[in-house]
Amino acid sequence: MIERFKCSVSRPSYRGILHLSVRHELEDVDGVGPATVEKLKAAGISTVEALAVAPTRLLIEIADLTEEKASTITKNARALLNIRFTTAKEVLSRRGNIGYLTTGSKAIDALLGRGLETQAITELIGEFGSGKTQLCHQLCVSVQLPPDRGGLDGRALFIDTEGTFRPERVMSIAKGLGLDPDTVLNNIIYARAYNSDHQMLLADEAVTIVPENNVRLLVVDSVITHFRSEYPGRESLAPRQQKLNRHIHQLLRMADIHNIAVVLTNQIQSSPDVFFGNPNKPAGGNILAHGSTYRIWLRKSKENRRIARIIDSPLHPESECVFAITQNGIIDIEETK
Ligand code: GTP
Ligand code: MG
Image 1 (tube, rainbow, N blue to C red):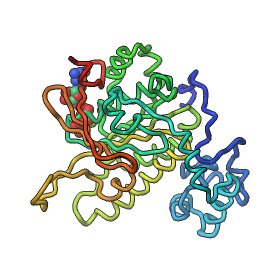
Image 2 (image 1 turned 90 degrees about the vertical axis):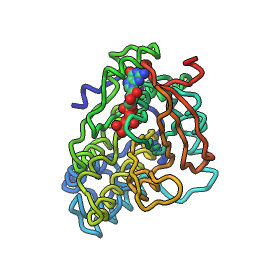
Image 3 (image 1 turned 135 degrees about the horizontal axis):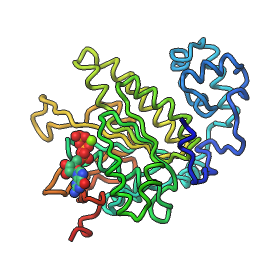
Image 4 (image 1 turned 60 degrees about the vertical axis):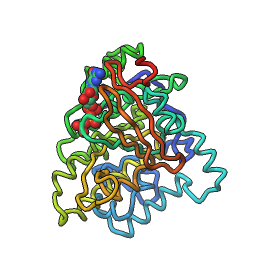
């Protein structure tokens, strides 16, 4: 299947936070023989990077390893990749590798500083029709632009849980940016997720697809739909959140290791127990709130106008801006005048 995704975009020399110059295989890790490689691959862990950051409990549960084995091989994988304590100066230089992805609107980009960051999860929250899916389509196109036009010179991977991905929208956005629609469509790797298990399986598969295909943007639209419908009621909240936590951390590790931007969409839920202030809040509870690096709340305004508000960021103050959804995608209000 991967063959179809071969593209002309060259693979980045950047190797995530791990400063790798040599590519290691799972077999290179001390204690990992052919049988363990098979178990790990079957569990979706196909690279040393993925093994190095996999929680021991996960290896015990999904790769059927003993606790001792799991803890030894993750430790050995980290040693092989030289993952260790570092200095703040090194963290700063690592942050120098962060790429920025334009949303199509300078105003939204400015809310985030310079656009969506790689090595981070950006969550788009909003009620139906607020523009979450439209923005995802836009990002799948703009990621293919060169950095001097706000792109990351890479491909997009789209996990669609609601069946609302529309190639036609991608084509009109691509035309608006002067790109060849056919090439742009070929550079979007798409999968429909039919339930939460399938969604998590696709994220596992993405661990291999992302580095092999120069994917620089991973979208999950929406991250919460299946979890909400499969785990209704308070009594199923704990298992749901546990599973969601595993999913979000898998995505966060991918963002970090492969220096990609991860975008999740999330719905609004109303909390009947709120008497003051906004009775609506993002679904997914603390797991999503803590897992996302940046949270943007989208609201409808007049006609095709929408308001984007940044509600959670380690770096930026809460602020908002107006943008518009047009035939050619997301644009600034000034451009519509
Ligand atoms: P849910 O997935 O239902 O929660 O909503 P969402 O936030 O994903 O909404 P989505 O991004 O699908 O936004 C849908 C809105 O985008 C529609 O109501 C339209 O107003 C607008 N839209 C979609 N396509 C076009 C288009 O080709 N031109 C214009 N001008 N607007 C469009
Ligand atoms: Mg949508």
